[in-house]
Image: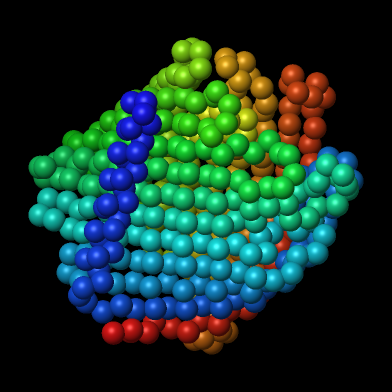
Length: 394
């Protein structure tokens, strides 16, 4: 066994052990509650696959079940949230007809902080074209995602906070026809030190180590990054947090290094009925060719609770991804999106939901295609939900 593989397995065992411990703790005391919601909705999308030529639209009708369970006592809590949907998709809707997800999050408090553990299991449908008929979009397989994490927040003094988190994600694709999808495992260790210099201002230092291992190919890598910055509350409602630094990616196959800038900035405005969050981020994430793609993202999210019955959210985002093969830029992709959704409680048990969206995809010219390409997609959905309310189980 290689040292790198041994580290990954040791981290995985630690994550699973921590999650299992919290689940066992929750099963022995305090009441459990469940709060089910069933949603029926219909959706339309003009070109969800962002085809440049021969755009394909489609419709879908789905039923979704949300079944969150929660437990808590004076110091600990646990939430287990399964979701599933089933229905019929026609044409190129690109929606998952049989998606299934299980999320869980547990916390345990101690004298100077708290421990946390999380796990997510997902089965996500994939849609696309086959090599024999590029004009029709249909289900072509599914993706399994397994993510586990453990962490702690420790406050050794009244002015200092230390956060440590380990996360391991495993993505595997199950597709009958040949594709460019790459199975991979991504293990991360993140740390952050925060020191309060005043009642409103904090200094922040954050560090990251990650090990990226695609199941096939030779593009495994190890990335490190260090960021410094701070956080300042201008008022009780308005806070700015920003860090900036450098990252280094070591390519396992060649030993070459790729350097880049990384940053994270968030401006948050929180009032009892209004929330506005604007963020900017540049980082690394698993890419499309078994690499770590450099990702730049800008987003704005505005949520208003107009009354006990009515709420709506307006959001916009831009992202740019750059895939690198060895030290050469292989592919660039730009995405723009705008979304609006609203929820209205018809009664205490029935809720109306509506959503509209528009997106644009751009592929600047590069070595894979010399001519720049772009495509747009627009659509929406309407639905109704039956909310059953929170019920004690024991």
